[in-house]
Image (cartoon, rainbow, N blue to C red; front, side, top):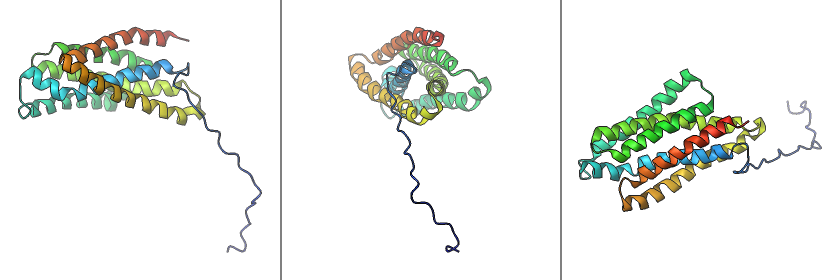
Length: 208
């Protein structure tokens, strides 16, 4: 059969696809990337420090704190899954609305972390944080994607993924130092950052 097949034209030249280089400081999305770093920094602080903070608050040893710690982290994870699998499918808000709604919820959760003296307060905090992160995660990714051209989607995906990773680098390192100073300090300072982030969100939402 190969004798009857047409020989391909070897003189055809193909233009290589032009590589797109996306910059972190691109005016179209730089504020959203910064917001993403702060949001995922808060996620890192919430999860990484809890293994030390919960035993401190409840005055438990490592063995006795295993069950309440797993339950508390599970509440946060369940809230996040519920929001992303059920709630977001029904709400269908613009991406910025998820950020504007989610960040205050994370803030409330961190305030509860800061003042917690009992297990139920830590679990309420975990629920608020999980709910807020469930809203902000998809909102962050979608908002950045909508601010670039279709042919730039693949290139900007790397930036979208890098900012959460950056938050998970900065969060645990800084939180560990702050925890040594005072156990509730990582949660308190993260709450302050989230509070300052809210007017930035409103400003970005109003930008043309």
